Length: 339
Image (cartoon, rainbow, N blue to C red):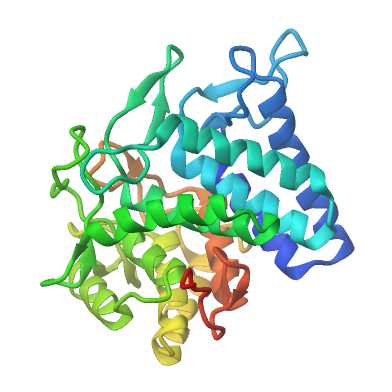
């Protein structure tokens, strides 16, 4: 199974290092994503599906993409824009810019929402596409950065306006009294979803936004997601603290780095290094998703104790002190949307 989000991260990591071999690998992934987009058997509207068969991108006909997960998540589309634009920035090849613009238009045309605080809905699911009416804070963070990067690449102010629309929704999900972001809304597009309180919507808020209360977010995560399990210290996906989610632990390292908490970041990077070599099912190279099987998310699915592209990519970002949203060092200022 090749999740698009994981492959987007696998573009960003080698482009940041930028050796000739890295750039060849990044190009293969970028071109594969565009091929899947162009060879979709049902649509010709620039969408990317959530996942494909990893062993062969072509179906039995040899002409169409081999879709494994048929939905089209707004966040996955936005991360693909971010990845393609990073490759465009490094190479100047306008193919990747043009594809990114088409994908941005798809998000705007299909997910723009006027209910409540606005923002963009979750995308579509299933083979017979059903619109997801809820809105995700995480997805809107992704869209904000993707559209701001499109504005940067094109100097077209429309992308900045569309980005600001996503950010307005994100800001409406801030819990001022407790210092964290809610996960988003229920299907009515207005009511706050209070059932799950994830770590990543908050670490991503720190990485993406220049004007958030970073210390409050880090304190909330420490108090609600920090845990010890399987001989490691780290952070869970949510607040039930039933295991360590190594991807989120790497994200916390980056959040600490942005807030100048280098001592805490170093502590958890060392835990990730130990996980690389000694966690159950480790191979000395990649990072497993979770310290044991079935680490829950609260969304009806869980993380396995298996090697994971996403966790490995975020570990690389933490080691390289990279803010993957903007492609800048964690010590550099986060870009602002202020005029």
